[in-house]
Length: 520
Image (cartoon, rainbow, N blue to C red):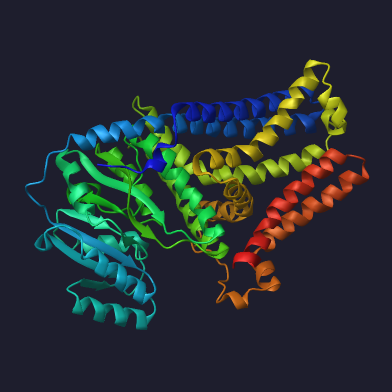
């Protein structure tokens, strides 16, 4: 079986170069934090130094973890090739439920994708198709029900969205009997009809709970192709490395699950990111998981910043819920770390977007306070930095290196692995633009409030306006205003470096307003 060449990501030297970048980034941040701790002169600067050190430790942990993932992922492709080459030809064909959950989706798109799924190369008598409709729009429900009746598809509609997607799947499981469940999202168009023929043989391993394939979307605009990098990094590096630890995430679609495993687990945990919870429970119940770096279907690209923000809100809300769920299991001893370091995968997954958002916001706030503290470096000139003559000045250079590397690493990696500097720069900007949204999602999850993000949708491109953009990014604008005002004060106090530092942060957070105005 041939796998995605893009996933291999070049040679081992490139992976080692990536590891080097992340380790230098981690060490630079830690060294700068220690420098601040040593040079603190009063209670305020000591507290700031401790806060920065804590943030540096968290960042260092994620940077080192990322380095490990990038390195390990290189070897996965040889491993999965050996596993695939050892499979026996299929003689018996188990029954499969092919399931598509729907919530107020475009009818024509759903119909096209469902009909495409029905062309899969698999015995027709062994497949049963389910359309799970949670739509609140009666016209959509009526159209899909009529379509299903005409095409031999089992149509199931719920009057409420209890349990979200997981609730719809669990409801279907009550009346279905198929041995396996293949799930596709409503926007995913099958491009490889051998999906079931290639995935089912892996279940010869009786302990295998699910097989996840690589998810991707069709090419679109520069914006949508840049957004796709989030998935590209995940499926190219993180999923393969996790699969080595038997912690590959079931990503919600483009995968096959064994019904027996679902029954033992008790169905899909009914959270907004049911896939992460299900993957964890499968591991807890001593099942195996497998990731195939091959694309079988393409989804629709994300073309608006509003849609991206809603997606990221849901992801971070769910991941924050998962952290609480995970630690509750550990505290109650329902789950133990045993001797497996792989459990760290779940911690890093849950903290992932929080690291990119909450830590970023906290670092900005601490940086703001540092500018107005009396640390010696706050008033050093550029020439003094470049002509470092003592150990304190030399270590301070690590702070400058950490800042520059934090800007350059995503751009460098995007150029090396995905051949695009401009998309890497957009990815960097997007992480700032989404920081407030992700942080608010994490807070909402901790407080247990409704998981829906309350943002207006752009009804059409012509409806986009400055007022629409400003209304939806009030928090980002306020944060940027504070940073710009503080920058002006720093400049008034003759702290040019601090002023420029805060202006940079202010512009980055204001990117949310500019992106929603530009892309809707």
